[in-house]
Image (cartoon, each protein chain N blue to C red):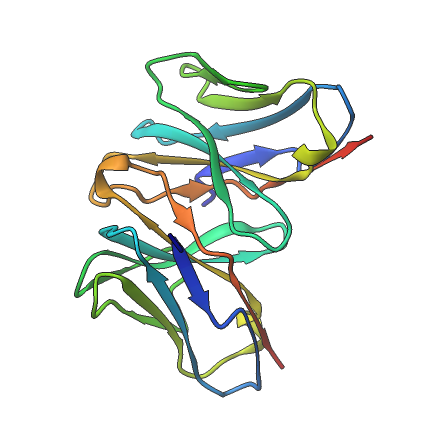
Length: 113
Length: 114
């Protein structure tokens, strides 16, 4: 049972380049989330999805887009990367009935030069 | 506006000592308060959680104390061990338009010296 899998684990981009982070979960969870983690800032919610085909903005959505075409996948896109988007990105998923119990992936470290 | 405030930012404890991390919140709609533990290079994982109908929850060496009137909750790690060295996040969520959305504190980096 893989849980939540994120790809890639590491990526270096130049300013202005685009990329997509992929999150896949095999727990049949309805809810999926993308967080970013920066030193001293904790975990901040970028976007989330409460079901296939639905997405919503979190606390820090600017510069990111997401899609949830399949229940098991949640994609995070950067259309034009900026140095401020250098961070560690975490995907998570949960059952809607379990409230706040999130299952996290191992993270994707992104550096924008 | 930070929904959940966590302190201290870092904590150093000797092996066998008690580690205490505190969190405070303002939103009275919050009704679920989990703590997450994160080891370097890994994603956070649920450690223990509490709902406001109880004042304390204990699981092994980990205890959450909850003070509803003060809107504060804390994590106590008894007999702290070097293997407990990690970053700890408190969080809160509540009933509303989006079930399951968690608001995290900024984290506490715990180091337990052998």
